[in-house]
Length: 345
Length: 241
Image 1 (spheres, rainbow over the protein chains, first blue to last red):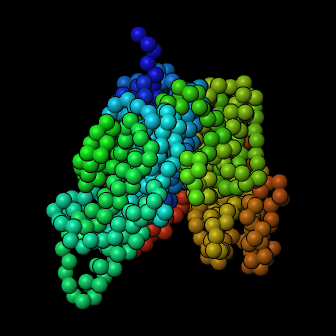
Image 2 (cartoon, chains in turn orange, red):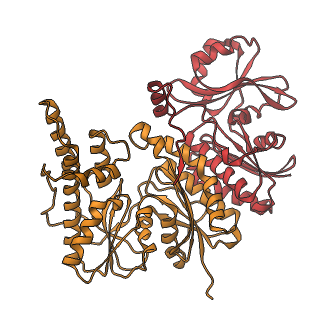
């Protein structure tokens, strides 16, 4: 039997502290997640200093639980992986310093992982990747199309020019009085309503692969404020449905456009907003119509949000390529993939 | 007892490896590089020079603040994780006490001070007794004006210590007159050797999981929220999912 590979993986880039144990890059032995949502709900969004303070409260508890639930000891481990960016710098620093310390204490190699690579590799728990592959990454901080020629190779083809899709959800959630994080509730409301407001589909016909959501957000807020001023009550479910229809239309049409230009074997949907049912259903519907040969891999619902398991899966690929960091590893809050050559305007 | 001591509370960074009361290796810098990049390489280097493996340590001592929130988190995360992962003893010492410990004159009153911006400081009053800094007025976040009032009842000379004293020296001297005594510049940097010698005598923490920095201040967002919701509790704020 081939020797098994075990990676202890850390994630602390935003408001979840997570530590996981991953076997051979695609098997979850444990994935402990401590979420701070209940704390940041007080403030209507993530407060970075509060997040950092929670991370340091949780970090060793998460390590202990992850090892216990996986039923492994430090001697069994092959490496330590950690998110070093992008994210909130103070939050990242807790995971980075804890991971470096565990690696030093137990003489293990350290694998610095890009958080967005982690999101893509959440889909690796569904099935093996085949290349070339395209990933639609949608989260609270990012909305981007990423082309992958091989494992561990990421090239941005398009991204949002302003707000990330998840950010737009949180902002219109505030207008509708939906507590942070608004995505899940808006998604549910959208399923109860109809697209009656016909909000703009920004850049949908433009010949590029970029997104924009700030215009939609403004149109939404103006519509609600105007109704408030003239004392009209708008149906919140229809508002949510109309907003979501615009977001899903733009994401889907841009993705289909990019897939025509870059034929791939698989399309991966990942990131926090990949948990959105409207988006999942639409891609499941249109992809087989437009590209019958192409396979759609959606990150499992449980792994769409931030978690250590996805960092372990991405870290495993780097382990195979011996891409290790050292004791001087620092957080890089604005880390991003390179653009595909020729794509950057 | 083999002991590693870490202080990253402010711009200076100090690490020391001790065996009982013998200092084996130490490094102190004040160059403003990112502590997250420099701390572990310095620990590795000093441990290697001392011929020690991480597992050889018996105890980790760390300065728990007050100070830069990010700075103390880097030191405390490293110390807490190291102690937890190797099942070693962990001791926290006030960053102000550690700095006050640079003064050796028996009976001397010492005022360690870190800038906290907008005319506020992190400070406390200590007296050197049996070569140890003993707290006289507790560590706090306070305005310079209010701090001077608290110090009024002590007619003795007060030795002010820390690199940030300079920016408040004129003010302090004006109000405290000849009770204001400036420490010599070589005492202004915290020394992990002093931290280690203080920490070796203290009882280790019982629950490593609960060990967090002493920020001495709530965040602005939490203060605002508490002011608006005096009776409300939303805790637990963190949940395992």
